[in-house]
Amino acid sequence: MQADRIRVEIVDVAALEASERAAWRALRDATPALGSPYFDLRFIEIAAQVAPGARLAVVRDGDGLRGFLPFQRRGALVQPLAAPLSDFHGLIAAPGVSIAQLLPHLPGARRARFGGLVSPSGADLPGLSPRSAMAADLSHGFDAYLAGRDARFLKDKRRRRRALERDHGPLSFSFAPATLDDVALIVDRKRAQIARTHQYDVFACGWTVTLLERLATSGTEDFGLRMATLRAGGRMVAAELGLLSGTRHHLWFPIYDPAFARYSPGALMTLDTLEAAAGLGVERVDFGVDADSYKRDFADPAEVVFEGLIERRGGARGHSMRTIGASRLARRFDRIVACEPGLVGQLRGGGGFLTALARRHPRLGAALGMGFGLVGLALMVD
Image (tube, rainbow, N blue to C red; front, side, top):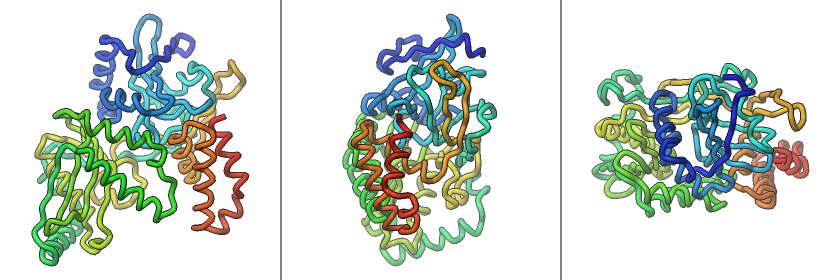
């Protein structure tokens, strides 16, 4: 697709016509890599209702519709819609359309940041950092899935399951559509964990909680939040909110009771979730990117996704690009900018994060300096 033929219209997601919605679904169905629940138009519509700065780029080539890019604006910065909660994101588009082609056609956009860009055109963006999307293949059933896992890992989990039941009573597991009470429980526990570990609180801005609440009240038989809960003797020992779309399920927000850590309740719950999902016809369960080593116990690398910054260069009419891989510090600031649409909130969040960083790592905090960090945060969106 030639860049000079691209025509981009920026619209509200709610303004999509029936023919455009049908085209979205057709493009997604034709591209297995877009099977993630985050590419389901129902998720996009709900996210666009609550995420500040939510917009949609409709991409055309001549008279033909070639694709869509859901995004949110933070000044001159483009981020995935619903970031930092959208683990996977990218173009819903026909082959040959790339992010690099599209960015110059987004008015006022000078840079775009991604954390899990699903892009067959990733080879056109060599500066971005490649990551593996981790997934459990349930397409042949749960027994076939277990046959492909490490026998020592499974033996250890069976032993821990027996010990948990022996010490604390009968185990029970449920996997069902999430309620508002489920959302409140998960958010409360996650915020407590965030406070203990001195991280930035992605739920403090409000709209991220509203997103989960809307998903919990807008679900259907084949879409929406699902709550997995493992109990021992009637006491909840682990739980997780996940997002379902058709035959794909994405594990999202897990919690577990630290008092039961010796039994690996989170791992036991995950295995139960996979079995329950397979029984409902789910063919793939996503674990996000390969950032955590524990995921390899349950999942295998699937498609490659990309992380980093795409920056437009050459002035107002320049179309040249440079790409920069993401650092750990950049990821932290990304979350703040994504959650906080205004500069005051961004500076407040950045100040809190740097204060916590200095407490955990005094030498690093002193080296960065409060002023340096806040200026860098402002430059991300300028």
